[in-house]
Length: 134
Image (cartoon, rainbow, N blue to C red; front, side, top):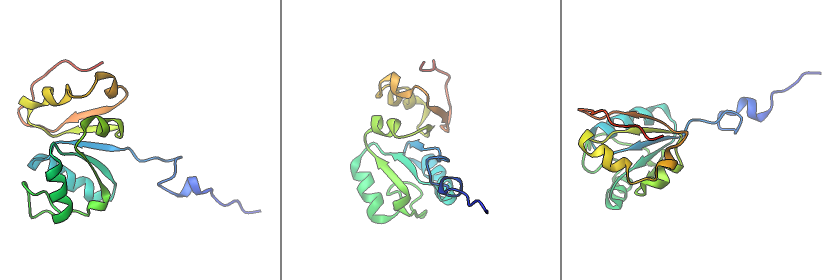
């Protein structure tokens, strides 16, 4: 009798092989460039914008309204957030793409326990070292 693989063994979206939920924090040119790389992989990802008006414009125009405006996206693959806490809760790995002078202030908007178990890397320029959240 031939055994057929279960759906979870062959379906990349099944719970047996979950994709890492990536959360991108920042909406400038660095973040947009990194988002385009993520977008090209076909993986859905979460993206934080500080202002809802930027999210509305992005969805309407199909590109970042302020940075790298010639780079278009399929917005159905992007989950936009203007609530940083919700983005952190819905993401496994955080890509921090904010200017280093503002990074600490942005991270402090979320209760420290929300970061527990999350991976994070900073893609900002002029990174300064700071204490990590335990």
